[in-house]
Image (cartoon, rainbow, N blue to C red; front, side, top):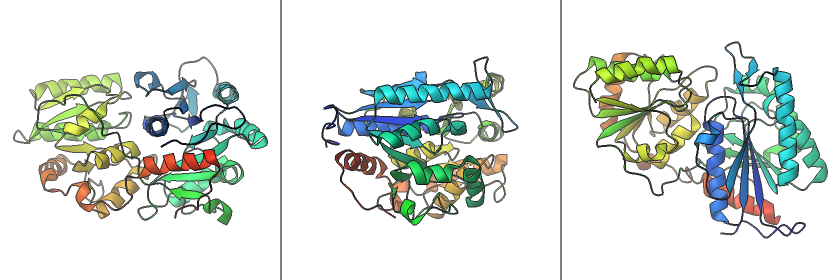
Length: 404
């Protein structure tokens, strides 16, 4: 499918720009990368550029006609404030630098469509100068992309009010895409969006992961243990290792992916415990091609991030989700709704207790769970196809009614 005709003003193929603020974890970058791959595959003449603050962006492979620009990194402190990751600059100076780099990239790349991930004003409002310029020139269609769950409605409403995100969404964005289904969860509930803005919303379905060629998986059978980026995965990894340590008959063996943000000191501690299990658990570092491990797994124990959830559904794997509950309830909300639908099992701290016995029982019960495909609903994994059709509509000026 061709996304659209050449730009009438420039006589060139389509250009799609992604903004992914990425102060922590892998989720925003991986989502943008999946979308960029789908768009450029749908139209091989199209190009996509991802602006990202992810410190591990360079460790990913990108499809043909997709590239990225790394913005100076920032990190979130325990008290909620931010600091520069590597540069000897204050956070205000770093934000100003990032904002200038974004403006320059937009001016030079001159995108036909800008897709902003999650943050309507960008990190600390860094996107606002660029949005103002694009609003004046009217050369670029601007889209806000939201994952299926953001946070509790009351918490999100207060956050958006503080960041002036609601005004930005009403003012700048031509469309809002929710990468999920309204029948499962509405991330904007509690936000006083105007009827006009609600009419511009589209529920795309979840973003299916590439099920194309994968490498040879590890020796069968095994369950995959993945804490996502790993920065907040200590409790889950510790629980799985404790389960194998306390039950010598627990099977099958486990393959553990640490994630790039697991601290070196903590990883050394885990490595010692893994070695003592004599092959019943093996561990690997950051896997940019984690799809191979998903494809070969008999089951999955994971946290409840958006991308991991999409992989569980896409590869049709029985899964136990151990969601984090701080600093947001996002993962818990997603996992609890998925459990209600029969897609996964959740290990809930208040209901089940995060104990070694609870994890042993959950791993042993994995083979008895339903596969997601046995309970999946229509349109659940149609997100990438829906997005490419919307990009086509934006590029050609075709107007379609929003979904809801």
